[in-house]
Every structure is written in structure tokens, then in C-alpha cells.
Image (tube, rainbow, N blue to C red; front, side, top):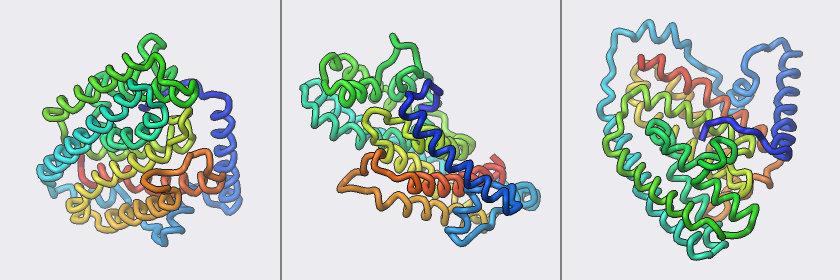
Length: 307
């Protein structure tokens, strides 16, 4: 959910602390006479590949080539439907636990169910009110209209109860089922794929890295990983065409996806991920640097592909 909202004091403090660290990095690099994207350069150094193609130069040399995205679009629709099928199934298990008053079961099922949604969130955002109905956080919408996962998250973790959540759970499942019905015929084109991949990383940068998305459960790493996986899926589908037009950019993006996922791997715990509250300041900073290093070349993909 990408609508802005008022950040609680604790989270704001954490965000400011992180921003301060980023600022220090910028200053340090500024002292070295380097005014380019700091975090991107840092991560580029980590991956050992700082090569990022010039969009304009490469696009000019390849503009005459028209790519066929039919296979990529068909495969992405198939992926979205598969993820949506599992999303409905997992959401039903979650909402059943909520309605049965099984607090700990509901807590355990919450984040895994959301991962299927987070991987395909650009589709939901293109389908009217489904995204705010499913994924709005407190203050994203009027209080009277607030429903979905995060309203139940607040009840489970902040209020430590499932009381009063039966109707919310029922509506959440209906919204998930409506999303599943709509994705069959949703309009998907190459531009949606490219912008969707970039938006998924923007989601991570704007709300997951800061710990704002899952402010009660602190299960942000589940969303973080799912957003990256969703963006990586789109990259993999567009990779053949990208490799034809700019193999250096294709290689750079692939390497930086690998670097970011490797950075996330140590935080896996069993079938899930550790609480975001357990991450140290330098670990959050390094995740953000790897994220920025990936976002920059990924944002050039649309220009190179001409979409």
C-alpha cells in the first residue's frame, strides 16, 4: 500500500535514525568529491560491477528493434493467477483462525499469507479500490473505511485479541476472492510490467525499510522479500529482450538482485523471517544500499526496452 500516512513517534524516530546514517554516508562521499548516488555506488562496489548503461545512448542504438512481449505478458498473467490462487487459500486459513478466536494461529498465518499479495501488488493497485481495501494502513484512509490486513494486524498485536474482527475477516476474504476474479481479465502490458517492477522496489524503500508497513507485527521482512521476488520475476520475464538490447544492463540487474537476496538470506528463520525489530542499524543500512543499487539500473530497463 503506497498511500502516505502519519508515522507513529517510535517509527519516526527509527526512520530519522536511519536517515541520519544515510546522511552521514552522503557527507562522507561528498568529502571525497563524489556527488553521485552514494548507496548505489556502495552496493555497486559490493557486487564488483559498477557498470550501468547509459539509457539514452543504448536506446538510440537499439530503437529500430521492436520487442515482442507477448510471451512475457502471458507468463506474467499465469504467475499472477498462481500467486492469487494461493493468496486466497492462505487468506482463508488466516481469516478462519481470526474468526475462531485462535490468536496465536492467526498471528502465525498473517505474514505468510501476505507474501502472495505483496509479490503481485502492482496488479491490485491497478484494480480500483482493492489495494486500499486489502492493504491500507491506519490513516491511509478514513477511519470508517479502514479494513483489511492491517486492521486485523492492529487487533492481534497491539490489542492482543481477535474480538470484533469477524466482519473485518469476512470482508478481507471477499476482497481477496474479488482480486482473484479480476486478475483473469486484468489488462497487462509491457509498461505495467516495467513500472510494476520499479514500484515494488519503491514499496520496499518507502515503507518496508523504514518498518512502517508492519508497525504492529514487525513482520516487514516477509513483505520486503516478497516485493523483491515479485520484481525479480518481472525482470526474469523481460530478461531475454533486455539481453538483446543491453547485455551489460541485464547482467548488472541480475547481479544486484542476487546481492540483495543474499543480504536478506541471514534473516530467514525456519519457514519465515525474524522480527524487523531485531535488525541492527548497520544491517538496515546495508539492505537499503543494496536496494538502491538495484533500483537505479532497474529504472533504466523501460527506456532500453522502449516501453
